[in-house]
Image (cartoon, rainbow, N blue to C red):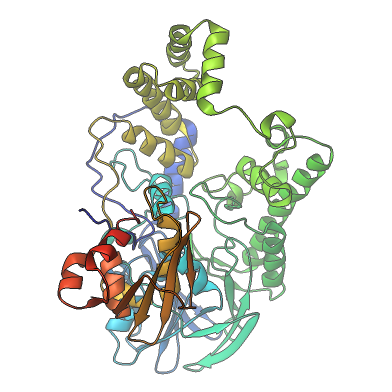
Length: 567
């Protein structure tokens, strides 16, 4: 019997950019502008002498910036890079300026490019740095590392272009590239959290931290009153914001984002240190915050205006463009988010997925729709000929949509996929938005017969300590395959040497997790560590049982059969 790891320990994967190399394709003027945008991420350490002291910003080392504030006998890191290997490189730069120990690490939010390098500082300091975040940051990190990790990993890999060959990859829009696969993830749980605001002094540095929902619900910004400096996290960067990200996300509170930017500008910062793209100083800092919040409000308000007139989201997308005074701002070029994706997200945030059109409430299944379209045009062969004609005429978006029908019909699949790949390459190579470009070009790679799938993630022993036991059982629940499962009710009770207890009860084709151990068909005694290692695939379950690290009071075979339900 083969057992599969059900815990995936990395948000985004990558591999060598030599796999499935794509052909060179002429670049459009929009792509040339994206190439020029890469100058925003040239590897450089910026140092600023503010009224309160020195601040250093490492740009271009990974997708997110890392910031160091010099204090008295100790320094503070704001955002810890996207991997321990990148954190090590950045820290060497910081040490060349000031070699004092790191006293604190501040996470501006939960994304891995801001948190996954933290373990480097934990392992390379005599004294453990304090780790500070919003009170919900660990919750969102656990969620991504847990129940939705596999799909987020795939979609993020596409969006950030980590599989693309070097001659096709330009940048990630808000950074040079994502490097989380350079080393096993080094996320460390915060030990100091707050809800609304936290005012604290560390190494003589007065810090004011404020909850500032925007790109994420747990987003914070850091205000240094002595330094007249503000660290906005991901609530502003030098491109139109990702009010929605195509890799997938919970709804982003757009009005909350506007409020957060207004809160920031109330401090009138002289220095603005975004977690992506270059720092901004002087009067330009406040001007940037105003332009950014006005652009977000414009898209929000106009979307609502047209919603209230009864327009569907696909119609509103065609009706909203930034006014010239905003569209001309370098801060609002669509090198990350776009107005059209934002419109759809705002609509969905207020009214949900149903667009109000009766025909879209319960649409035909994809295959049946394909059959009816094929019948309408005269058969599958004519539909395929229409796909060929669309590709020959470089009508590539229509070609993609036609290929959907043929794929659903399973008609001439090999030839259809070749034409679909051609359409993806055409659109992707000409897209000036890197998220779209990378997603389409990677989707084309996936259609190559030699594509071997997404690379395996690096599993780390140390990261198991940071994954909560509740996260483990949440993963079990959403990984449960009810086919060929037990008839009736079946309960497995886990007693951990930490004193924690959980019951996993199969009933009505769901897995209920509770702390109430009553009737148990199977009793398991083990350590949290051994259980996590088994589910992560780091240890063989058969050997874990045989060695006694997992003690099964009843049938050991029954326990292995239970594990087989989670694949």
